[in-house]
Image 1: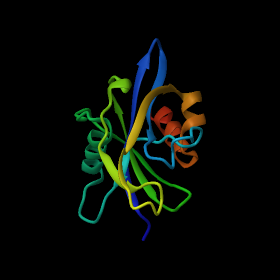
Image 2: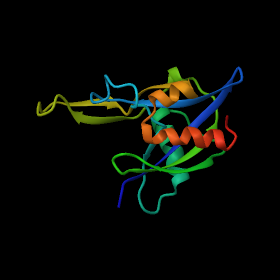
Image 3: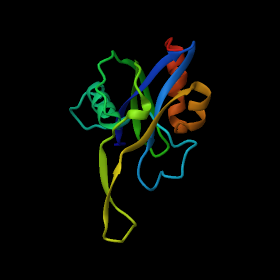
Image 4: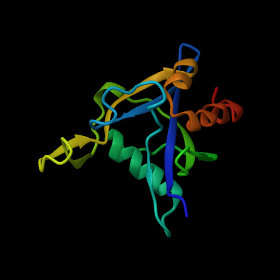
Length: 153
């Protein structure tokens, strides 16, 4: 069974322009990657967990902000590695430069025996749809279309 994640595509309107909030993964593997590396805030969930609750939890863990806005289902997408992502949209506004992400521990450099802590998300940004399409994980681009289809844009 493929891994399952749930996440939130946050959006806002600024000067009549639709913007979405994307996050860049932290850690050494992603340090020099940009186009195609950004994502919606999301995380894995297991049996018995409700996707909406997981999406809210992961949003809080990756951005440091509790999400209380209503969630609108955007359906599921399948990423290249097989992971299924169940996504929701939420209209909110927050300061992307002030995020505080949870961290993870990784042996770095590899085989060094030295454990280091890295933020799960090293930055977040509000992007218009064209910029978001260039930066988002290609499999997640369908979520941008779905947001527009439900009237988010």
